[in-house]
Length: 350
Length: 282
Image (cartoon, rainbow over all chains, first blue to last red; front, side, top):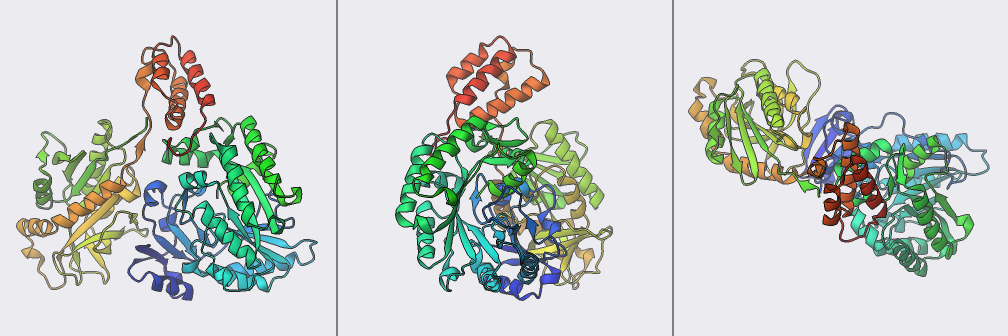
């Protein structure tokens, strides 16, 4: 429960801001001029703040849409990502947000209409492309975890129904799918679930729904007609990883229709060096930031031979259920340095 | 292994009469021959220091920085909790009300400081303007004092925003007379809120525990090691400490090594052998 809301003066009367504040009637409300005064100020400790994050309501005035790195090819056409929110309800130990942001407070941009306008005009620019333009949500937050508060899905799904040459991918670990089940499936929307075997999820994905609950949500969404993506990214190396991933995949594909899965991606645990250093400083006692890593490189990842072994093993396991055309593997060592950096920013993590 | 630090508690007041109820509450003892009046003691496992800065933002900042430097030199500065406690004016709130400061700005500055609101405080919060002179020209929705902006500016160099807080007890408003504000009255106002203050201090101390890096430098104290060697050693020890690979056998072997190169090779070999085991290592 949020007990402090910071609100920019300029969104004080925005209907979405008012609706959010109505939901947290007992929260103290602190007016600010710009969100950066609170969110970007120095001397904050992400780990301490994560114990009781505040909510910041703000206006995103520019740079609402970003191109994805070239290597990120799941969509097949032009690829963009956007973030209506920064930071996440969950506290996944491997998540790059801990290294990227000063603050663990939730920053919600309430001007959804401007995001949608940018998406619509960008989709129009790609109107003659052979493949639709893809728009990814959920890299700087979980797309659905805060949906009951933000109404994000309802707003953006309605918008994408009017954009036939655009695809929306919602990256999530959340089981907050009521808004998706309350409407017919939208053919140009993919719900992409981040998954880890139960043992990994319970140890590293603090606060997120358990593996089985996520699979239940996937099954319900698939039965409702929604396109589903599966993301094992990062794949976490540990003593029983082959057994754990084999068990998770078996459980998953006993329940979901593999042929109807849009795509499956696998990625190694990898981080830009600066993010890694911050995260390791926050959790010096955690094995995740020590075990198997090549900490001398500019990008922190598992040692190359180890990553090849781990991704290779999980790829082999996944291929028992999924065709080659459905599977995308993102190793840390094949791409050039610039691509590695970009992919790490996008892909390591949830 | 990494350990969780017991954070120190640093209290800052402007006046001796503001400090008195806190000194009594924590059983603090005056330290001799210090640049600022300094009182110290223990609250359970936590070292407590209280400095009396004198009036004004400059004094509050200087005294806080002095305390931070002093504690740093003694190796006690990491993850310290800082709390400024004092009286403030407000247009309408009744004397005796306690408010946590959620924004602070010096009267001649544009930018505000926003303390991070992580520790639980069940009472009211308010913005605070720090003025250069006493005033009864109260703003509509904020408190006024003469110290907090200097305190926040100085202390934010030494600790993390979540652990730097200020609580003000209302001492005067538009209907009261500043001249009646005697030291005894001020002490009584602080004393009347001592339970809430102690409860908030407990909450701050509870969130403040941060892990400290593993320290095994004594194992190589007999070896010649450059700064670079020590940095590599510390990094490897940290890794092995996190993955559970720093067992007694390895520690004994390290203690018997003849060169730092031998030590680093042993540590690297062990690091590369370590496989993380879920449910038990963390």
